[in-house]
Structure formats: structure tokens, C-alpha cells
Length: 370
Ligand code: SF4
Ligand code: SF4
View 1 (cartoon, helix red, strand yellow):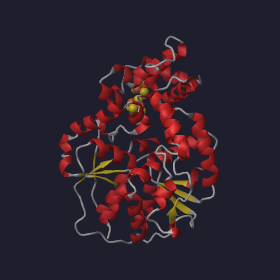
View 2: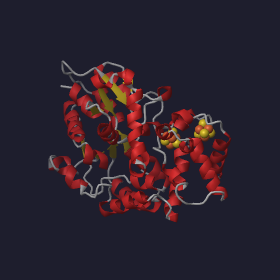
View 3: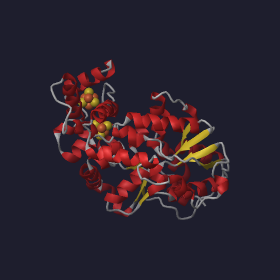
View 4: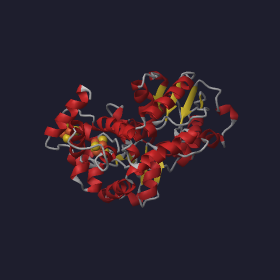
């Protein structure tokens, strides 16, 4: 155990649970054991040998969406999600992770994505060959967007056209997943192997625009942890769009929607500092400051889709959405559009929220601009 992990476990153990009210998982389960404090205390007992490496203790390492809301309020910046992930890795290696995790990883390895599909063929359909592979700047949509929200990719290239941006193409490589699902499963070896292959392919591109906040965090930071450093090759899509909106002239449609609420994916929290890029870009284009779909303390709410929670604890993951929708009643979401920054979040919210009016920020911007 590294000194940092040891220190994190000690701090949490002694803490009067200051982040307790923020954890979407323990709130959904109404369970003290799944608070950040509860999970970290259980990991400390595993370390000391006072608990054994068996389920349901090891399941606690998976009771986390990796939303980082606890870290955001923690006076010691304890990276609970990262610490729990280390225990996922140990649990996975010992064979004591939930069976659903091993099944999931087995499926993943068939086609290097969680959907057992040829995602390059899926994403290529509907796009001209010119867009695939002729450019040094490419858009990497990520596996969830290709599988669940392909319309966003069409909307993005429509938006690029309207803004006069001709430089970007579509990422044309056989592997269309960054490997985060394997990382979240605790399959560190599988993740590392995939990262190595992607690293050698991706270094041939000058700039890779990354749509999914989870993919961006993975490619930029988790790859680096494994020794695969491509740093500035990766640019978050919203940063790029903001610069395009600032540089180019465009006209707005007459009746674009202004009745929106903004949902920001949790993974923005892991790399964005300062003001929200999504909010800034909506202000620039639509001229309005969007209301944030927030949970406690004004932070953008977790939808429950991260950290593989839908695989390991599907009921909890669903309850996170239900609870969030109940608590958001004052926002009157039935009458407004919920604009989210992630295709995975859009899919999860659409699946369980009763409102149909859920869209991706790229589609929203495309619907505003003529
Ligand atoms: S993450 Fe910070 S606030 Fe939360 S239990 Fe640990 S020490 Fe306390
Ligand atoms: S990262 Fe989020 S889900 Fe995980 S323990 Fe912290 S608050 Fe809970």
C-alpha cells in the first residue's frame, strides 16, 4: 500500500463524514456502508486483515460512480474514487469482484468495446469517405456515443460546417473505445494492453478532439499513469467548439430553445478548473446563463451511469436517476429541455427519467445555429 493510499484511508477513518450527503450511491441506497466514509473504512479493514477479500465487502469498492463530489468538498482533497479503484484492481486479480464484472470484461475483449460490435463499421455508415482518415485533426466520439447517440456525431459535423470549420475528420481506427470500462472494472492488465495499442495508433494524429468527458480523462490522465503520454494531442471537444464559436461568424435560428437546464457530466470535475465550459459556450451562442441540473451544494448532479455502476448495481444506478428527478421538481423538467455534455449520461437519463426532452449539448448548439 502506498503512503498516499494509507494516508487517505486514515483521514477518512477519522473524519466525521463531512461528504456524506453528497454521495449519490449512499443516498440512493440509504446505506451508511456505502458512504465514502463507509467504503474507505471497509478498505482500511481489508488492508489490516480485519475483513477478508470476499463479497460483499469487495463489492463496496464498486459502489462508486467516480463522480468526485466527495473529493470536491473534502478539506483534504481525498481522491476516494481513485483509492477505491485500486481496491477494484486487487479484488479483480483475486477473483473476488462481482461475477457481472468478469462477464462484462469477457464480452469487452471480443471486439475491444462493451457492445461486442464493430464500432468502426457502425460509425462509418452515413459519413463520406473524405471525412474518415484524411485529416490530422480527428473527432473521437467514444463507444457510448457511437452505440447510443450517433445523431450527435452528425450534429457535430453539421455544426462544424456551419461554423466553417473544415479541418476535422472522424477518427477512422478499428478500436473506438478508450478502455475506461476495463479500468472501472478493475481489469488493469486489460486496460493497459488496450491503452498501449491505442497509444501507438493515436500518436499518428496531431489533434484528437474528445467528445466524452470520461474518454478525455482516460486518454489524457489514466493513459499517462500507465506510461502512455500523449498529453496535448487530446483536446476536449467543448474547448475546441468554444474557440470555433469565438472565431467564426454565424447566425442564430429565430426560435431556438431557451427553456433549458444544463447537466454536466461528473468527469468534467476531474480535469476542468474554473468556470464551466458548457455554460460558457451556451452563454456565447444562445446568450443565456443556463440553470444547472444540480444536486446538493449546487454541484452538477451525478446521473448514476459512471464507475460501471449500471453493471455492478443496476438497481442503485436507476435509483440515482429517480432520486435526482424527484429532487429536481422545482426545475420543472417536464416542460424544459435537459441539455447534457455526455452521450452516456444522455442515454442513462433517457432510460430512467420520465422526461423525453433530453439532448446532447452538441445537438443543442446545432439546433441554435442556422
Ligand atoms: S473524503 Fe474527505 S470529507 Fe469525505 S470522509 Fe474522507 S476525509 Fe471525510
Ligand atoms: S466519488 Fe462519488 S460515488 Fe464515489 S464515493 Fe465519492 S461521492 Fe460517492
